[in-house]
Image (tube, rainbow, N blue to C red; front, side):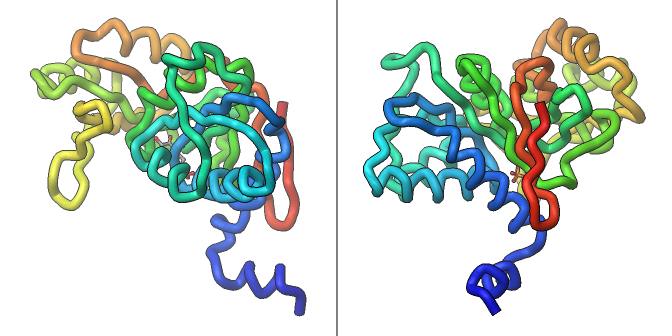
Length: 234
Ligand code: 5RP
């Protein structure tokens, strides 16, 4: 039995698919690039592989989209920078919670959606890496994360729910989840998101809303790990 097959037994199938997609994305990274580093478990595998390439001599700098990603990048020896040094990134690589046929996304499952959107919007190209379970026919199967200011979050939640969803304040181990920006996350379950762009715009008009987990028209390419193969969608 090959080493590869032995290894697949050690991790869940979806993790293996995430790892395959993540490693494929690192092939797009070239010497001298400034890279937006997304967040989440799929991005973990990307950072691990990128760290190996950095050790082999690849020269890059990354801008992390979460404190956790910054920690992993540090662990893997990936040099970091910030927007003080680079206002335009060559490439951003990030995960997603849902991806539709138009490559629109729901993100924020890990609570990093604001920084992810800032980093991804500053990149010339956004590459999304995921396992195949993230592909959906319509966005909204899972709850849409919306970051809100803690002050008056109850009234913000009421206004959001009037758009046709059930809002739940995100908690972690029974404590209110606090984002890297010191804000709360409301997970908003819609029956169906018919028009992601107009929903995003309606949410952004509400006072107290910082950002939504809808990433519309930002993705250039999706790399999907599917069983033993890689699928690339443009
Ligand atoms: C974090 C995110 C992640 O990219 C998203 O939740 C996917 O995570 P994973 O790769 O662990 O499935 O948006 O805010």
